[in-house]
Image 1 (cartoon, one colour):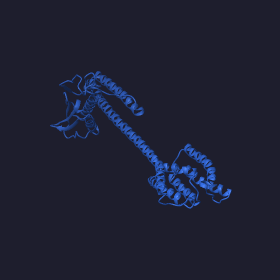
Image 2 (cartoon, rainbow, N blue to C red):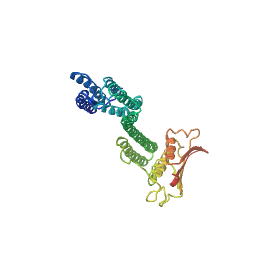
Image 3 (tube, helix red, strand yellow):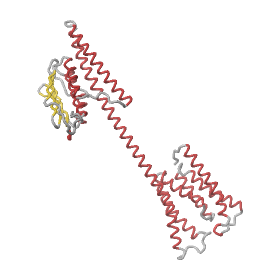
Image 4 (cartoon, rainbow, N blue to C red):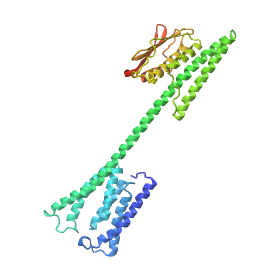
Length: 405
């Protein structure tokens, strides 16, 4: 029933109502002493008391118009009925009715909203009937001669009251539209933030999983070679150190993004593929790479200003290759070759990674790795398939370039 208002709003409404009362009360007393040539028969004390009553009711409605529009409308109706019951003419106090009708439309509930609309229509009719058929202003009452004037008064009253309500309704609509727009903007911002968190989590998974796979492979090799060939163990430890440092730097950048939501973070490109291949070969994997045709150059749509494929395409290719090679390290048959084929066609990139598997294993159950690769391909507008083909696990991706992307 009561709306939550800020302190300055309550102070402002009470101040306006107090000023209104100080102006309306003396005017009510003046109107009571013979307005329209009519003497009411009250003494001076009666004029003061009844003038204060009417002015006080309308001032109270004015003070409560934003705090409780429904209550303010009820008090305004009580003030109007008291005014008519005392046979008093229209006065300055009636101006508060317009403010109350505005508030019912702008701030009221659905019930109060339509109650204000009905009050504007009924109020115009009541004013017309009262002024032309009331006990004080009867003056011949309503007749065919006074009917045109009564209709004019009805239209004027309905226009004044309806205008107040309509302005409030327009303000209500504008406020609702702004709130909806702000809610939509917040939802869009939350969606973008969530997508960014998902991207960062995927990058974190790719970086950590690949680096740990290389570290584990190197550590196992160093452990077996330590006694026979210390130089090999030393090289393996150097590779472990370099891989761990690189992974730590990437993780720090990703954590910085999560904390500050700033910075570009690690964004690998096809230029970093050779380093990726070198890390895998250093882990003791026989890696065979075939790139045919090579990445195109030019100014076609889907390429950068330098003619290279778009950054999103390069990132997708790198991350898919990184995850596929990581899976080959972790789940592939020991000592088996890993074949990588890249074809940078005019309209798409075709990527195949093939490695032998240990008989009896289920290569499709690699945790979130396959899910992440498939999501990356789909985000780039392509598709990814992974399956066991004749004893080898094959990851095959198609990523569009240009219009298809």
